[in-house]
Length: 97
Image (cartoon, rainbow, N blue to C red; front, side, top):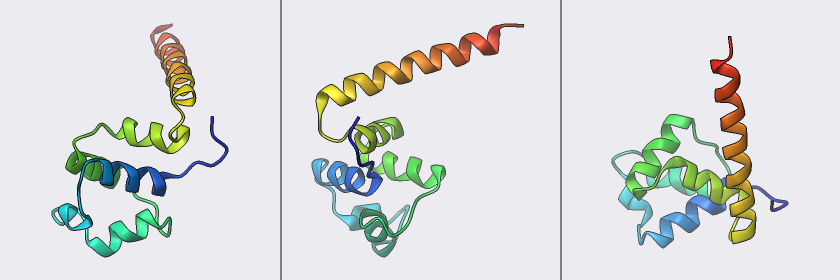
């Protein structure tokens, strides 16, 4: 996994990859707030994160994966495999009486 986790960089990268301006988020956020998020001055709530991802038409896990793994595909594959193992363990524990 990459050494630096950056939700701000991931948000900016994903927004630009989708060809969206900060103004495109006006229904869910002000341009000033989005700019603050992209400059890592503020942190969004999970609800706000979901709203932003809806505008970009991506699942919130996509944004979080990009934040944790960055642009390195090998890190992304490793991270997703780890998440899968952890989810399976949690669900197994939950279903065990």
